Image 1 (tube, rainbow, N blue to C red):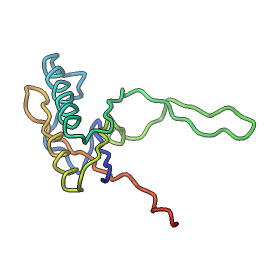
Image 2: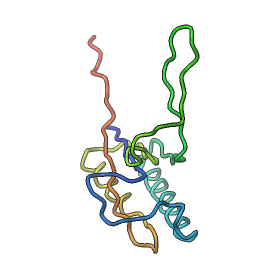
Image 3: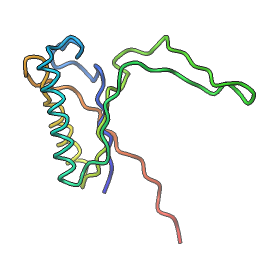
Length: 136
């Protein structure tokens, strides 16, 4: 079965469905409802045997690159790309088809936001590359 990575971005996609403030500006009950939905999706995918992994990421990050054979890694905390380029979290799923991956992504997109209204956020659906079968 193919694996798909469903990427959630802090903000991004082709166009916003509606403006939504950052989660740190939401009412506590809205954050709680949003997170409860994420756990519900995890449970549903787990019961279906489709969940490989799911994680949320904090917005802080450090950029690192190779510093050379005799140097420590080079790190920086900025400047950063546009916020829309940053991944907020993901679901890794193992499903029967691309259509099922799109179905799951659409469901994730319906997660509640401020006031309980669905976010309808864009979910970036990416198939995991597999190696060709080894020749015998």
